[in-house]
Amino acid sequence: MIEFGRDGDAWTLSARISLPRPVAEVFTFFAEPGNLETLTPPWLRFHILTPQPILMRAGARIDYRLRVHGLPVRWQSEITAWEPPVRFVDEQRRGPYRVWVHEHTFEEGDGGTEVRDRVRYKVPGGRLVNRLLVRRELYAIFRFRQNRLREILGEPASPAGPRSGES
Image (tube, rainbow, N blue to C red; front, side, top):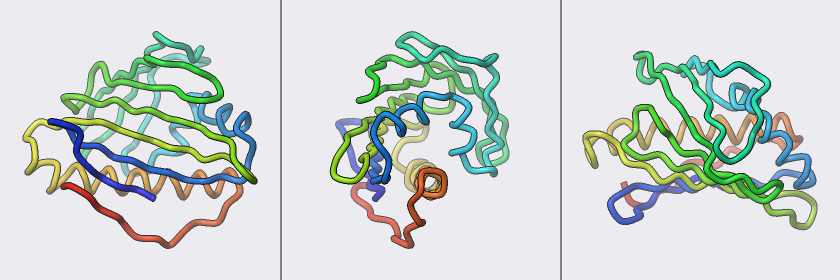
């Protein structure tokens, strides 16, 4: 499930997926920065620039290079919360968004782990840019990510389409 909404003067993306693996295994997968390249669509040409291995902890900064609509972009994230195996938060320190705060949570349940993403973001150009470009792109990125998680962590891909809230 992927949904969009509003949070004050920002937009939100909420995504949820259930994976048939224990929470410790799922969190360990997310705790490896190199796996972010695996979960990112190839059309973004995403590459981690920070030398690896990267020690994941609060305060860790990670530099990336990617392409957004064909234009090269540099992005830096800081891990601002690190609470294994329950949650972590990464915030953009440099990049294309005015605000990007991405909270990842992991909850063990019957037969697996529920992974939730909540992104609070602001874009230059506001509502029009979000509606015409950003929202559609974020949906495609998170859809790709969920399908890759299903492939890697053992669940078949879902054919479900988009769900929308505020644009």
